[in-house]
Length: 481
Image (cartoon, rainbow, N blue to C red):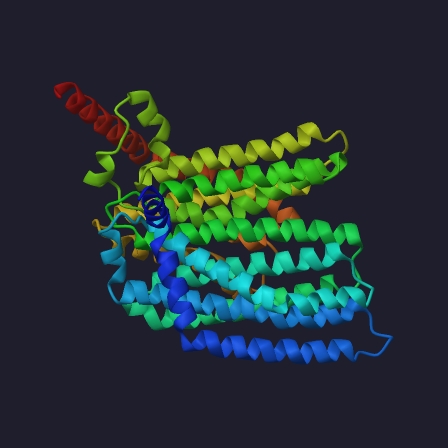
């Protein structure tokens, strides 16, 4: 009786989405078709490897096997994950799942684990042929293991992308567009990754450089997987719930992880360039994060307001992470300060000379990120509440960026002026790419960004006061009990 209770408790703790998806996968016709084709491919590859002429090395044979396995892991499995997630949101099953004790994170994690089990299965099918390539010499066990692990990690990242795209089909008007875009992204990612593997294993890279590149690609895949899981979870979450905190924590935390790897793997003499380059990359990606944060609903939903900490100091500490475009802009300001501090840290730790142009690029990216986030917040305040208005504001920011880049170029072409001019100050690509233009634009961009942020002081303070007021009400309700 006790053992049956323990087994029941264990089954209750198992992710039910994982158990259901695995059962559906094993019973599906697509699984049998892919399994038969994979076994035929393994047989053909085994025959080719066994009958290979003596001049061919194990590297060539392994490259042939891994390039056959990769499309299965990074295209077939992610497409199955896409259709599974699309079925959840399209058939209304996600609402029924959320009525149970399953959270959006457990739903997405269950689907991701199901894809991971499929990746392990297909890798085990091809494993005997991979092991045989080692006997042909020319490739080490470390290279085989690293390449196989990297292919599995990339397949898991593509599966997370498939789940995220499938969850985005909750927007019924763009279902066909999302489906086409998902196929394009997955096919393009598969082609790019197979090309990278073919180059990495062709022998042009040294062993140390190869392993170091594998480490960085694995880190990028891991961060991309986390971000895609956040996107999928946000689509399974009710609009009145908190969707913002994960995204606002992602960029600074990911950058700090990257900085730790830079300090561990990069030579000390290169820290002065590596850390600013990392900060510049984060700021370039951060423009998207900041614009999305600055175009959220202005006020807290009743559900999120009821979850604000009762302690005033704790509430103000977490206020930048809560939804609201004023708080989102304040969070963007804090994130930019952290990233600029990281770039300056590289200059402090590096005893050698640093590249001044790289630091100027970092500063320009920080200014552009804050400027366009401020513009986005100003546009969002002109519209009433509603999720569709958030996307309209984001679209208008994109239009402003495109017009700011294209119109000055067209005007200069009509009047016959070449090179960078002050008209290009809203064009981040040309301004940052032009050495003289970046020097000239920096003080003007500082002034524009300062004026835009001054215009946003009121919304940012109102956002903080709203959190303080929600904390005060919660504390009063707790005292009343």
